[in-house]
Image (cartoon, rainbow, N blue to C red; front, side, top):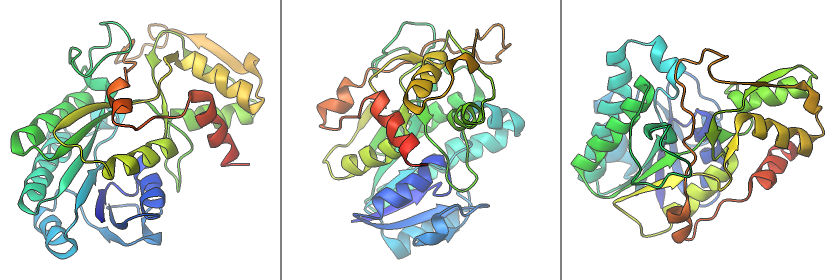
Length: 294
């Protein structure tokens, strides 16, 4: 089976390159930074260069497209012109869907848990109210809508908070926390923001499982099973890695003057598990993250 990965130099993309190349023939796309894509069958192009993108489909003939390329967090989206964010997150997603329909490929689209209303309760199901509060989340949801309007051979994965250690100069909040605690530096963590974290390497493994299943036309919460605050996540990391919990400082989103106060987008993942794709528990995922660097 042939798999085309967009955003192959990103946080998740690099883990997908490693995991999916074990089973499938992959072609992984990057733009400015190659990451580990250079170690695999890869192509350098902008996701908005539509003629070159179509040539990829003509030449490679993918069976599945995993679309992770995006302006991938609220802070980055706010730094860019809104029309550029829209072009990358919405128009490029629609164009990819049109190419998938034309060339008979399935599309797996990585959306975000931030599309949900963050004040309507916890462990949200796929039919929960959608109120994205940032430009990033709004455009990721619009990407979902455009794909659904285009064709029906898709899986929308509303991806929970990704934890893990970035490869080749990619980083995230979990890694910053890990590095600070390892260096015995203090860390401020929210006590009033709740998510259902999923490790990057576990996400890649589970996407590999989904590829091999005959599932289409579905929106799926793609998350771990445990609801934790950022502070509780830090406590678990300290317990598993032997870091000093006294380095953790509790903080509220209001005290931090957080721009987007998303209190709770913890996800119910029973639908995901109903397809036979079951994430490991949070402590096990964190132990595997720690062991990957020891």
